Amino acid sequence: MPHYMSPPTYSSAGATSSSTARVETAGEGRAGQGGGVQRLLPVDRRLGVRLHESTPVTAIGPRSVTTPFGEVTARHVLRCTEGFTSELPGEKRTWLPMNSSMIVSEPLPEAAWRTIGWAGQELFSDQTHAYLYGQRTADGRIALGGRGVPYRFGSRVDAAGGTSASTVASLAATLARLFPAAASVPVAHAWSGVLAVPRDWCPSVRLDRVTGLGWAGGFVGQGVTASHLAARTLTDLVLGEDTERTRLPWTGRGSRRWEPEPARWLGVHGMYAAYRAADRQEEDARTTTSPLARIADVIAAR
Image 1 (cartoon, rainbow, N blue to C red):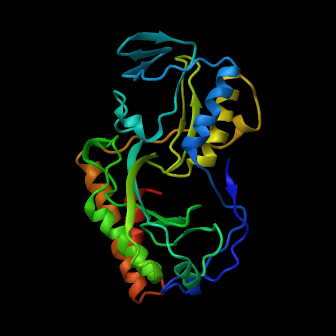
Image 2 (cartoon, rainbow, N blue to C red):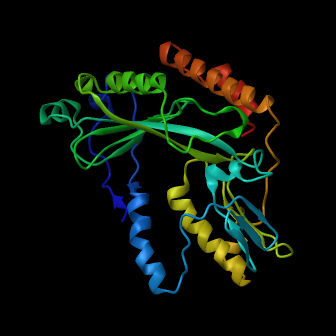
Image 3 (spheres, rainbow, N blue to C red):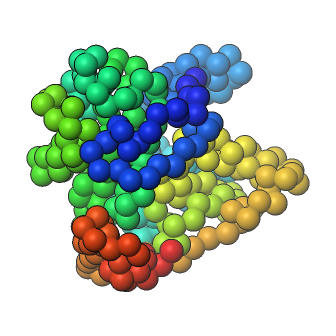
C-alpha cells in the first residue's frame, strides 16, 4: 500500500550543504510496486484471472500473441510493456527505453539524521535539468536516483539491472555533496531500470478496434500512479464504455516514432550532456536558465 507522508516541516536549507530554496508538496507518496503485485496475485486468481508466468512473448499481432510454446489468440491484445516495449519486433523506435539508476546507502547513525534534520519520511527531488530524486527509507538509509547512462545504442535493454561503476560513483558523490553528514556512509546497493519515453514525452492510451491491439504507457517515470488511471481507461475502451476517462486528452493519441540510429543515440546523449553542462553553469553563477538547457529542450522536443 502507498505510504503517504505528511507535509515536510524542515528547511531544506538546513538539511543540505548548498540549497537556497525549497518546494514543499503535501500528499506525495511512495509505494513498493513489487510487493503490491505479489499481493494482487491471489486477488486476481479469486476473480478468475488466468495468469501464465514464465511465458515470454516474442511478437504481437492483430488478435494474436506469439510465444515459444505456440500462438495465443484473443479478441484484444493489450501491450503494457513500458520500457521493455523496444524488445518486441518492430517497436524499437516506438518508445525510447531510458535508463534510470539508484543507489542506497548503509543505514545512517541517528547523529547523522539529527545533523541533516531529516526526521520524517519525506521524499525529495531537485530542480536540475538532469534530474535527481531520493527518499529516506523505512530502515534508515538514503536512496538516491538519477539518470546515469541515459540510453544504450539500438534501444537495448539490460534486463539484469546492472549499474556502471561511474554511475555509482557519480551518485555517491552527489549524496555526499547534498548531505555531508552522510559522506562517510558506504553505498550498500545499486541498480538500474528502464522507463518508456515517447517522442513527445507524453503518455497515451489507445485501442484499435479493427486489429484488437491496444496499449497504455509512455509514462516517462511517472507510472506508479498514472498506470492505475491508464489501466482503468484501457478497461473502459475494451468494454466499449464512454466514460470521463475515455474522454481524457491522452486517450486515442499517438506520437511520432523516434529517429533511427545513430541519430537516436547521438541525440539522447547530446541532450543529457547539454543538460548537465547547463546544471554546472547554473550552480556556479547563473541566475537564469542556461542557453544550453534551451538547446537540449529543442533536441528533446518537449
